[in-house]
Image (cartoon, rainbow over all chains, first blue to last red):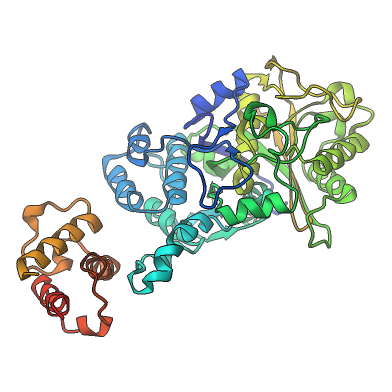
Length: 425
Length: 81
C-alpha cells in the first residue's frame, strides 16, 4: 500500500429485500430471514423461474422521509433528483444518504474535491430500457430526452455527485458478480494513492429484464428448477441440492475513509479494510477457477499482513451454484486445511438472494454488522454440506467474535476478488 | 381541438415534469425557464405534450418558441391538421 494509514469504513447504508436500513437488515441477519419469494408481477413474456428476493412496496419518497439527520435542503434536492428517476437511481440515493449521514458528512464536512465516488454497478438499466421498447417501436419520436442520460450507468455518477456535491474523481465500475468488491477495491486504491480522503462507494441494484433472466436460465446459472414452487427452499449455498443462484435486489453504500480524515472529523471507523486480492483467469466464460480463487484469497491476506490463522470467519461468495460452491469450498479448504476448526463460513446470499452487481457490498456490510454485534448469521437450507471438513454456520445465529474476515466474490469472465476486513474493537 | 384544450394539456405536462410547481404559477405568457424548467425539462415538456396530443412535429418547428404561448401555438397548428 502506498499510504500507510489505515483505510476504514465510516458509514454504511442498505435497502434490501430483508431490511430497508442497517437496523432492520441487522435484525434479519440475526433472525436468518430470507427475502426470496414468488415474484409479485408476471414478466412479459412469462418465464419459467418466477422467484426472487425483490424489493416490494417500494415508495421512494416514503423511504426518503425515514432517513434521519438529513438536512431539509438535502432532502428537497434528493426528492427532486429521485422522484422521476429510474428505480435504480432512487435505490442508490437512499443507500448513499444512509451511509453519508452515518459518517456525519453533512456536519463534519470534507472539501468537495477530496471526496471521490465509485459506483459499483453495470447494466442496471436493462429493465428500464426493456419497458420502453414496445412504445418506442410504435412511436420513436416520443422517447423522453431523459433517456439519453438515464440509460447510461454514469447517470449514477452524475446524480450522486450532484446530490452530495462531490468534485473528486467519479467512476462506474463493473465486475459481474464481483462488482461490489471491485467497487470497494477501486475506492480503496483512490484513497491509498492519496487522490481523495473520503470515497462514497455505492452499489447499484440489479433490475433484470426478462432477457437477462432468461439468459441466466439458458446458461444454467439460475436456480428455481426444482424449487420454483417452494421459494424458501430454493437458495441452498453449499448444500448437495443446490441448483443455481436466486436473483435478489439491494442497493448499498459504504463510506471509505483514511484514518487521518476520520480522526480529524472525529468519526468512528466501523472496520478496517486491511487488504484485498484481485486477479483475472484469462477466461471469458462463466466457469470458476480453483487457482484463481485461491490466489485472490491468499493475496488479500498477504496484503493485510495476516496469516491464515488470523482469519476466523469467511463470508463466502456462496451463490448456490453447484460448480461455484464446489470450487470455492475446495479453494477455501486448500488454504485453511490446518485451521478448519477455527474458521466459520456462511453465505449471505441464502438470505438476500444473489444481488449480482451489489452482492459484494451487501456481504461486506453483513460482515461489518456481524463484527460489531458479535454474531454470525445462519446458513439457510444447508442440510447436506458438499464439503465435510469445512465448518459452516448452522440454522440459527451464534454469538461470535470475528477477528479478521475474508469476503469473497467471483464473477463471470474469470473475475476473482477477496477482501480482508479487520475488527478494530 | 381548441387552443384552450391544448393549453390544458401543456399545463398538465408541465406539472408532471416539474412536480413542485403549483398550477397557479403557470401562465401562458410565462417562459418555461422562469417556472424552474431546465433545458432537458423543456425538451421533455415538448415531447410529452406531442405524445398526449398524438402529433409528431419536427423539433425544428419549436426553434422560434419563446414562451408557453408559443409552444401552445405550434402544437395547436399541428393538432388541427
